[in-house]
Amino acid sequence: MTPTWRRACAALLTVALATAGCTSGDGKADRPGITVVLFGDAEEVAGYRSLVDGFTDANPDMDVTLSPVATQDELMARLTTSFAGGQPPDVFLMNYRRYGQFAGQGAIEPAQSYLDASSAIKESDFSPRALDAFRFDGQKLTCLPQNLSSLVVYYNADLFQAAGVATPAPGWSWDDFLAAGKALTGDGRYGIGVEASIARLAPFVWSNRGELVDDENRPTTLTLRADPAAREAVDWFLDLQLRHRVVPPDAEEQSESSEARFLRGTLGMYLSSRVAVPTLRTITGFTWDVASLPVAPGGVPASILHSDAYCMSAGLPDHRPAWRFIEYAMGASGQQTLAESGRTVPSRLDVAGSPAFLDPAKPPRSSQVFLDAEPHLRATPRTATWARVEKEANKLLEEVFYGRVDREEGLRQLEETVRPLFTPAGK
Image 1 (cartoon, rainbow, N blue to C red):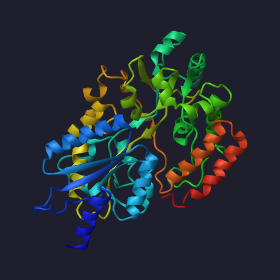
Image 2 (image 1 turned 30 degrees about the horizontal axis):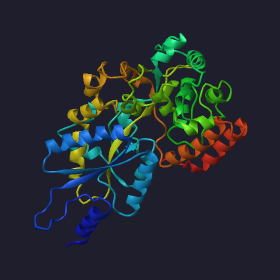
Image 3 (image 1 turned 90 degrees about the horizontal axis):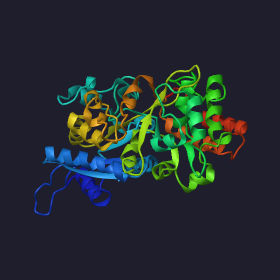
Image 4 (image 1 turned 90 degrees about the vertical axis):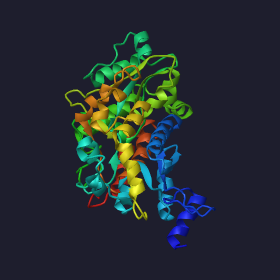
């Protein structure tokens, strides 16, 4: 038995992260198999299980082990450990704001040549905006994006009606958004639920014609204070909590998340991406829908790209089984399965415009909002350290948002803390 074969068998027996089948006790080789690692809650994972079932039905000669974790942080920890141990999964699902860490280390097998040679899928099948977010070197695809989501406003239509507030309309303004938040706050309810993070703040900065960083291609610092338009948006965002009190305060957010509060019917508006839909579809007590983000006064429509892609680990003995799974997942059948689950805004253009995604009988009724946002989507920088930048910045932004530290001091600390994390080359 070769060393490679022994390692593969040992990995299957210990952590289920190997790629090739081992010889069975009767001397017959098992079917080839792959492991797919991804993140999601129970409702999301159910959609991926349906995807895997469809793949194995169409490919009865292959086995797929789905190995989910609950959060993106757990996924990062799992991948870091598995790569360090030399036992990476065949395929993993990774957000574009986080894959740079692994791409920069050469841990991902670039997808471009496989896509170019494929007879099942082609580059023109997919949204260019989603594809561009996964061109780590700016030219060739590193991973294949399954979705083209954006930050949107989920709203409780029943609460709006009870408060006598008009439901969100296309092109609504920051003033409209805040007025609705105030009207919906009171009697144990809050008007707005939003995470204090760079990903949630960014669209408001861009809508106000500001910038997050000094150079999108080769960033060296955040510009949340130095750019006047960005700073105006930051203050407006912070004031939702610190001044207007339309967002649950620190202690209440710690005891019950905004998503849980929205599910319970005590939150008027909840800012999230399409990832929330499978869970929100469990709601039976009220009517809910989705709206675009509000636009800054004198500003422009803007949202942030939320996209996850299938990546192949570098250094596998044979990438063909992993690519075979990705081809199916990115094909019309695989994309339709996840679209019907509610989990994704398909990156595949024909499926995005089909009833599998747009069916108004399945909430949210206004799914077209996600497609209408496509021209206004922006992505954060593709750098090897961006995930670390966000992680550290989010910690301090949350401190400021909940009033744990002074606004000016907190923002100063934020920029100074993350500045060393930017690399001079921006890659």
